Length: 272
Image (tube, rainbow, N blue to C red):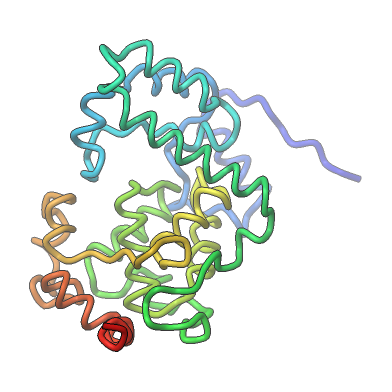
């Protein structure tokens, strides 16, 4: 007989304790997200959005982002009402443009998902890295899973993923790029890992973003260097990292490209 789950609780702690009792193997004390669910909380977050500040700061980890993704993902709020609200509070279309563009990308991912279904798990195109799919491994190494790579940024991103169920978009790209390009892990493996922990995770936005990083849904791979990471994280990881200026992300983009994708560069030279 199917057991009916409780729906009414006096407070959040009571809810958390109930879930721990019902799912003792799934709920860990250190992995309880502080994100509050429900329509009221979604509306509160919506009212805090400032389109102009979003445009200028959204790429920074402490930037003015909406944190609405989980509410949109679970149908608490839809893209159209977010769009209409942003247009209504903006002084002009240019002030709202960047935020609306991001809503458009989310809608685009969903439309692709609606068309191809489970094909979302397959490479949309070949890798543009100079490698083929068979050159990438299927399993995430233990040091990544345990947040013990020794790279302060990567380990902190992983811990945040576990503890909060959320990562800033830039942190997601950094982590995905490290997994695919530095550790040669298939993007599907990383995508499944994210979906296990992200409160806003859905195959459309998640998988196609991973494919964009990997280059199977883009004309080139996404990768970053230490200067880029230090800029958009305001140095909070780099200045405490024992590998500062000796990490895998050190160097110009040209130098990193040569190290990460030597076959790609060789093929490019051969076609000149």
